[in-house]
Length: 229
Length: 248
Picture 1 (cartoon, each protein chain N blue to C red):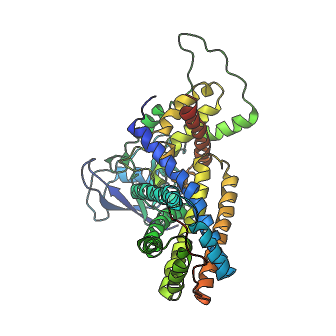
Picture 2: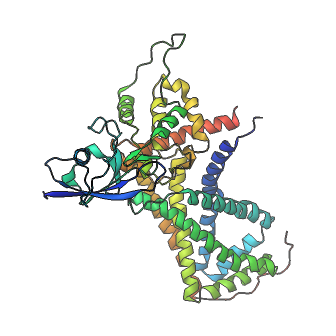
Picture 3: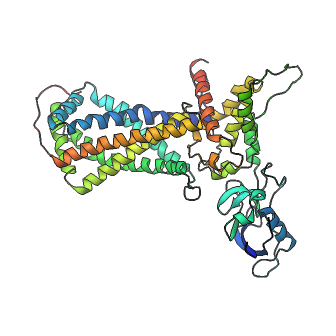
């Protein structure tokens, strides 16, 4: 087998950066917002959903391999890409150029938000060993607390908005980079369609936030027992 | 029409020296363009302070917006000086050299990187060598129309000057090269060397470095659908990459 040159590796890493943004990170974002929107139906349904995830076998492995490592890789490459750009959105003030600039800004914002988000949910959950059926009451308690303050709501609103924009606009860029969207009109129409998708994702997230903020209910573990892997 | 025109020029003695601004005041002539104003300055190089200075250096050739050599940043926007009419510009008129190419002197820059990059991407169609490669196939009308659009590229550098991904010190090939690779890959004889053109595009500085800011197509004086070319090259390189990774 031929070994890859440094130049080819750089290209492949950029391609992988584009791909990981959609699979698995974009997919994860959709599932994450979708699963959490169960809270808008009721806290029992939400607890059921969270219990389902937290009783998955090999959960830690799935999280690390399919979520944490891809996000870290995508973020690292993203900072590298963002650092290399020579921004000129004020000089060439086209909508697309602003989207290009915002894509990099929101990427940074989401990264900061994720440090906060993971640091206040997943990290304490792992530290206190709240696994299986114990995870949902613990996480629901944290979210009730965070959604009780305006600062917490603001942080989540900015985080969700940045993530949904970054995903919607990133999906558009992905479709062009990989040659799925060629024509000028196709690019414009898809851009609009993806922004609508982003808006729906945002509303999904905000509705979940509202459910937590308006009706902070605590729950007890449904069962006990089982083994955590 | 105002009686006088103020022209602010970003000047530089040589590639190493620091740039400085110099203002000139000239009588406004009917139908003057940036080149004719620069010619007026050349005839009487006296700045607004009344000091006789060295004439301003710039590049130009065709004077009808088809050669690309007089490309400069006029009132903050990259375009051809020959096609920039003074009456239609905001005053004072500011002239700067392009910032993405090595400076030579005053408004003159060295665009040779563009031509080297076109060479890298095999941006031509091979003709007969020691053997006859025969007549080319007939090209249908639609393809010819598309090819004509792409053929108008004059390597002026507007797309690269406005591209946030293209910098003085990186090795990004840029939209003009991608569009030319597409142009020659479209041609049935050119398509015989398709992979040769795609190969440099799947390396550092290749198509993956595009950030889809799409300034290139917005500023292109020839209205070349550069963003379509980028997407088309994206598609070609995707298939080429899959072929390389999984079938070779």
